[in-house]
Length: 379
Image (cartoon, rainbow, N blue to C red; front, side):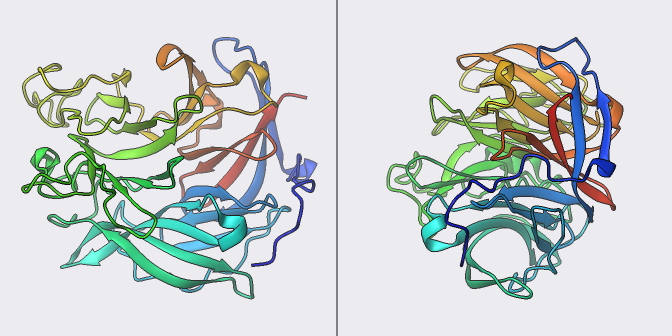
């Protein structure tokens, strides 16, 4: 794959001035002041994830099963060829995409999707090589992990990918909605954080490798539906967030072998109003570092490490679908000390949040005419 030899061409303003949105003053008078929101790309159907190439272009997934390459001016490529069959019912579809840490050398990407199984879908992780062309295509595509357990009829796939500093891959999964008790069953992959090597094997230091009744790929368990994951910039530990039912959305630090409680403990209730499980605490089960009641429906997550917003450095940003906003969590080490709600006036379901190479925040809006938005300091 041919790419520019320098990142000096990374754009700062990627949308014409005519596409700029009004400036918004975040609630709570934040240190960043006013914000400018611009449309970096439009015409996307339910965009799910953003990944930046070394030259500043973007790969964007659409839930309906399309992968797009987006030029610096916002033009969309034709759908990238070479994707596998994808289960696209309800919440299922093509979900996360990331670049391999050695992408500049090997052109490798990883993507997560719902694969069709027995009339339903299961979470799957694939590796491929991105090749330029008209259209661009994937070569050497292979599924390196497929979830084991009862398939979903269209709910709770999780499907965020993070590559750790050691090169291994974390993948989040969901409980498939109607199979919530399976999140406590180590004999399948529902409601788990999965950890595999870049070729899909279970690393020998995974916590349940030597346990006969457990899947060796499991890292942590007792999760509901994790649609956000990121590495803490200092500690390198994996942070995730997951949807609750009515209330009980959680941010967790996912540690090896730990049980995060779903559906035995939760800070939420069932959609019917009924109690779920045994309450909010139980010995041997972890508490979240942050939870929301009522739910915000979190999706997408990024730690901010850039220079464009100095006062936001090391904050954690979380997109919200139901609440239609972006949450900034201020941290003291690995403790959440305050929350700030941003961009409520946009009235957009925020599916993904990423830091761009220019230091701006990029958001994917979840609707049939979805956009990629660029958020920068107010002018």
